Image (cartoon, rainbow, N blue to C red):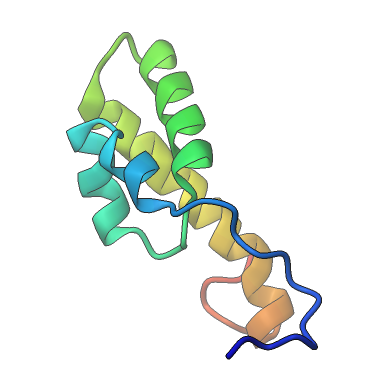
Length: 89
């Protein structure tokens, strides 16, 4: 039975095949990520980070970690209030 009252879009594909095609280092980073990254957005940032750091995968992983921390900080004040430790000051 489906929830016909929802306005959410239905997925037209399963996300796992796209995840399985990601580079192993990126999949390892996504495994520990705090946010639910899509394969497409993670791969886009991963490729940009590799270009910026001359193919250094460790530096690229650090770049993704910093990007995720910025996203969490941006939303923390809205979700948990401005006094939350992760909120931007």
